[in-house]
Each structure stands twice: as C-alpha cells, then as structure tokens.
Length: 205
Image 1 (cartoon, rainbow, N blue to C red):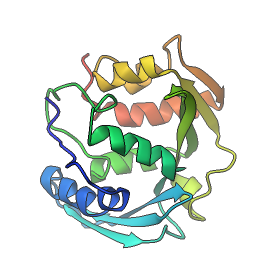
Image 2 (image 1 turned 180 degrees about the vertical axis):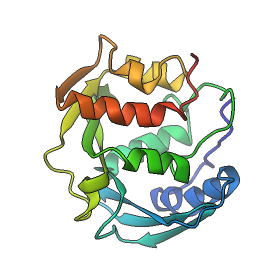
Image 3 (image 1 turned 45 degrees about the horizontal axis):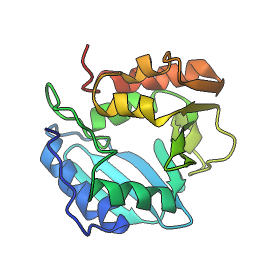
Image 4 (image 1 turned 120 degrees about the vertical axis):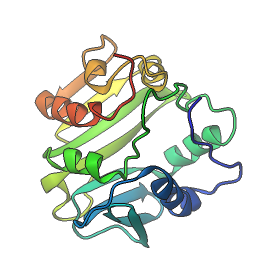
C-alpha cells in the first residue's frame, strides 16, 4: 500500500506546512549544501515559500519573489482533493512503490525539474463535473516569482487517465501519448518535464 496517510481533519495550511515538513524529514535522506527555493500559490488563498537544503526544509508564509520552481492552483481545488485524501481516497495513489518513495521536495527531483524551462498547465476536464488544473513553473518561469498566466503548454485529460497514473500503470512520459490526452502549445516542453519526473516515478515498466 502507499506509505503515506494524511490524518483526518488536516487543514490546507497544515498540509502545506507542518505535514510537508514531516514528510520531507521522513523520506529525504541525502544532505546538500545548495539551497533550492520553491513556491506555492493557492489562487484565492495563501502562498508559501519553501527553502530546501538536503534534508532540511523551511516553510515561510507568502510566495517567493524569485524561485527555481513553483506551483499554482485554486484554493477550492486543493480543498476538494484534501477532503478526498483524508476520507474516501478515490484520488489517492493506489500503488505500492517498488523502491524508494521520492518526495516532490527531494532536491534530486527538484534539480531535474529546474533544468527544464517551462510553464505547464495540467488539467482534468471531468473532476467531479468540472475542470480543475495545476500550473507548474520551472527555471526562468520563476525568476519574477509566481505568474500562472499564459502557460507554454496546456495538457488536458479525463480522470480515467489520472487513475492509471495513481495506480502506477502509466508513467508521466507515456501519459502524454495516451489517446485521452490533449496538448496545446509547446509539446516538447511538456515531454521534457515528464522525462524529468519519470526517473523518480514508481510506475510499472
């Protein structure tokens, strides 16, 4: 089974702060001298700055003015997912990782993602009857902070493809070739980011 459990009653703020720090300490093993700065913005809600240095993760209120990586999504989207993750877990990962579980805050993964110069919107078109999305920015996309307008590429899929990812049956780079997925914009950028994630994604290969 998936080795993470979000306690019932966890708030959005706690999920992005104390819970994120606890997961980082639990799963990130390698020390590092170089600091990596990342940001999260919940549109219609708060934002945070993450300073990662190996096994150390410091979370500060407010999104950064400059960062190597960032993510933005609507507050209500996070609230919907969090309600599921602390309850029925319809949209929670279903696979047992074949090896180590790599956090998004792991410096090895963050460095690979930061090598890609991209602003990518990833959307589910039929999540509980509506379209929801997350926008990810890497490299130059964060040099002026978090700006989620005008992504380089938009990737849309139905929840059936998302299910395959959650089950570990579909790797990120293979998902882009799935017949259900529609891409608009710079498709090469999307593939570069997918390949950066692929080395750490526990899909069956």
